[in-house]
Image (cartoon, rainbow, N blue to C red; front, top):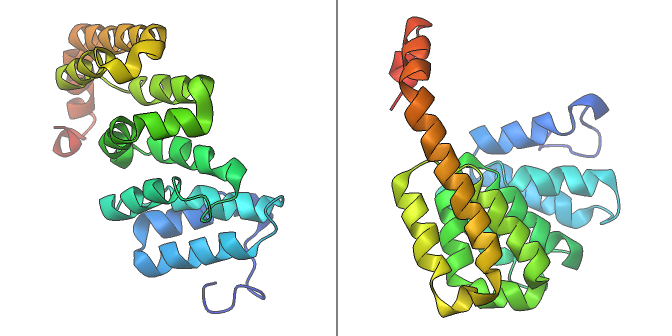
Length: 190
């Protein structure tokens, strides 16, 4: 497909899956190919969305960081895509810490660029998968900074959700681990 993208089109039923997996299991060449495809497509078309969304599928930390940094540049992405880019990256399990650090380091810029409603939604989305004590502490610590004053309700919701995740894991984690071990997945467990 990369050799002749014009004549080697992806089956419409697989347009979400193929580019994402090519990037997830590929490297820089596949990522650059998808980025160039995204840039060359009509920004309002479906193809543009598929390529754009696929960029966040990489598991390479430096490419994830690059993608996040690109969202601050007003020329790299179509204006409507910049925030969705951050949101897409945050949904990648390999990028949760990277996205959280990006959010903390660029909090005021993101607030100015995207507003409280969007940034609050991103905070809740990132924190929804948190289930470790150190991440709860991170949320609590950042909530106490002067930068986050307007976001206290958002952070309290995120902290409450993270605590609920920790409580659930405390109650059910051993049972889940035991079941997974019985099913032959012990080698994949932490």
